[in-house]
Length: 144
Image (cartoon, rainbow, N blue to C red; front, side, top):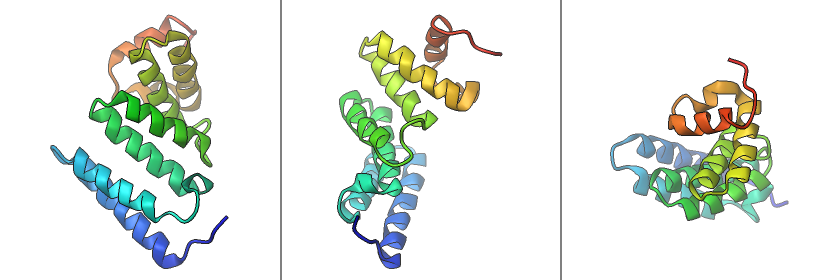
């Protein structure tokens, strides 16, 4: 794995912070996406060699998901789940489950949403459309 200088780490971290801030603004998703893409381009070597790369793919996936581009979101979250710290991360599995649900891949949706629930409990669903939790309740026993 290549090395990352402190300066490069600081630059990538700053771009991600800018992206996070822009994502919170009305109509800021497109600008946030650009910041995350710029950060990803600065990553040395394969971004999936770095935990930071996992989170940048996650952020890009979320920008695509929130923009309604499920195909691109799926691509980015599939990358994120393969990176360091990605497998088992509840938010990544939540989004993969939601995307599978919307694509009509219900077995996959149940699997991914279960992983999200097992990793973070009911709270991972708090800000999501209630249909995903309602669906999951038809598939597994959940502690309330």
